[in-house]
Length: 86
Ligand SMILES: [Fe+2]
Image 1 (cartoon, rainbow, N blue to C red):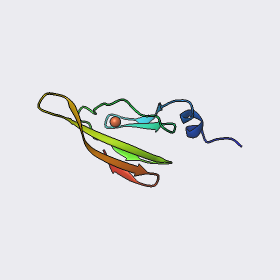
Image 2 (cartoon, rainbow, N blue to C red; image 1 turned 180 degrees about the vertical axis):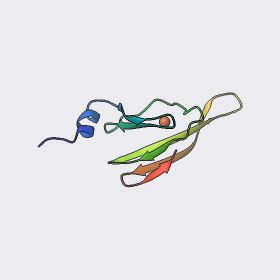
Image 3 (tube, rainbow, N blue to C red; image 1 turned 90 degrees about the vertical axis):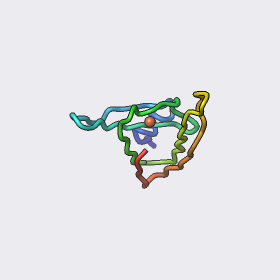
Image 4 (cartoon, rainbow, N blue to C red; image 1 turned 120 degrees about the vertical axis):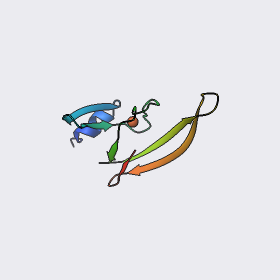
């Protein structure tokens, strides 16, 4: 049985595939395998919207404390069929 493209790719490693763009947005297909994660990053003030196509995703938000160290401030679980601003 053939796997869908996104599951086949995600079985090996995290991927980011450009699926469209113009002067106002960039659309990416992001695939993670089970247990994979993205490094801590920010979006430099850009808006971000997520549409989960399959599986579950945990997002962890961080802020900096007075010493400049990262501290976890929020966890959100996204599931297939949901979408949200992140
Ligand atoms: Fe991100």
